[in-house]
Image (cartoon, rainbow, N blue to C red; front, top):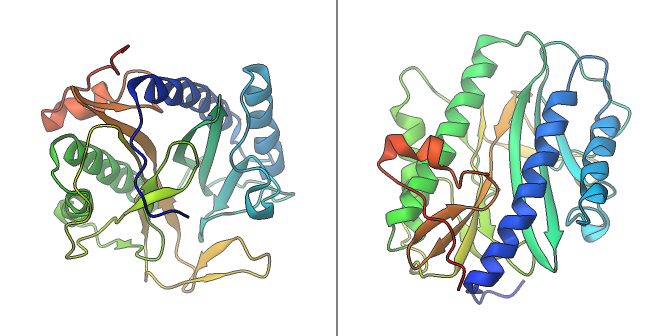
Amino acid sequence: MSRQIELKSNAQMATMHQAGLILHQGLDEVVAAAKPGVTTAQLDEVFRKVLSDHGATSNFLGYYGFPATICASVNDEVVHGIPGERVLQDGDVISVDAGAIIDGWHSDSARTVLVGKVDAADQRLSEVTEEAMWAGIAAFAKAKHVGEIGNAIEDSVRAQEGATFGILEDYVGHGIGSAMHQAPDVFNYRSGMRGPRVKAGMVLAIEPMLVRGDIATKTLADNWTVVTVDGANASQWEHSVARHKEGIWVTTAPDGGASRLERYGVTPVPIPQN
């Protein structure tokens, strides 16, 4: 992909928010449907219908041949799990990653879903991963360089009392806009690099991925599904976030992230209309 960072206009970011709201609704419905006895293919059908009902298209389906509209990664599957006949069981942990396109502009978001009665450590894994994402988003609001986001994510993880989770380094966040994956890379850890300067018009997908064990991963024979080598469970959380001249706005959240960013002293500002 091009390494040039695409800076969006307010109108373009507003369209990305439209795509993000559809994505948000789709993920809401997938989360509600993720119960014991449901297949991951059925979850994909739920999401497809939301896209169809709202006139949006998927940026996952057909991407380098990917056969579905969501990634459904269960337990030790970290990312890029292909929906199929796998039946969800009580206690499963599933990361659902998906996207939507409106008028050529993309959204991307992921959530970890706890199915039934889960292990307390898996619940803690999801909570720490989600909080790390919000810490990274809050950092983006004030950052001068993209590298500050990864610093904040790692600091959040390490600050959690009793948490010894590994932060994956092989898979990172990214820019997003007229394509799903764009420059710059957004590391989820202290890389030691400042990264590009943050500018108005930049939209980033911030997506930490944590594991309960070692961070070593491997890709299965389907050439998509990434699993932990040691079989430890994983969690992924992701939002797309716009930085405009007046502040930030989480384009994949109806309130722009206000309810979760308050504790960080950050107040999201709606994308200006002009």
